[in-house]
Structure formats: structure tokens, C-alpha cells
Length: 75
Image 1 (cartoon, one colour):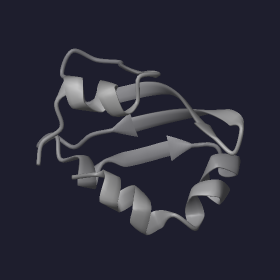
Image 2 (cartoon, rainbow, N blue to C red):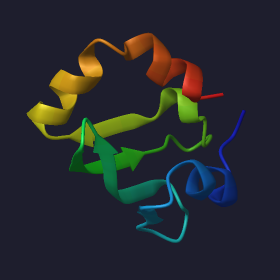
Image 3 (cartoon, helix red, strand yellow):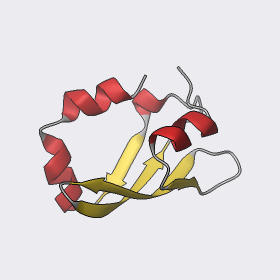
């Protein structure tokens, strides 16, 4: 399923599109009581399941045990 600007912003309201094609989003998410910078790069087909998540090593460490959940959130 292709992501729409509205669906991504509804799920992550602190992420904003960084280009006109809306294939790059950047902002912050909260995890374990802390805010983390996150950048999402969508492929040309806008499939969220194929997105690239770019973040700090601290956030990667937190998300490491939740790989399957992160994939489930991506329709």
C-alpha cells in the first residue's frame, strides 16, 4: 500500500515532508520518554514497507527489539 501524506502525518504528526515529491520526511518521535530525530526516505513507489529509517544509534538500539512491530505498522 502506498503511503499518502495524510496517513503518514496522522501516524507521525511531528514528521514533515522535506521535498515536493513527499518521499523524504524528517522530524521527531518519542520513545521511552525521550525525543529522537528521525528521517524517513520512501522509495519511488511510496511503499512504506520499503522505507529507509535513518536515526541515531540510541533510537536504533531502542527499536532493535521491535523490528516486527515496526514492519506491522507499515501497511
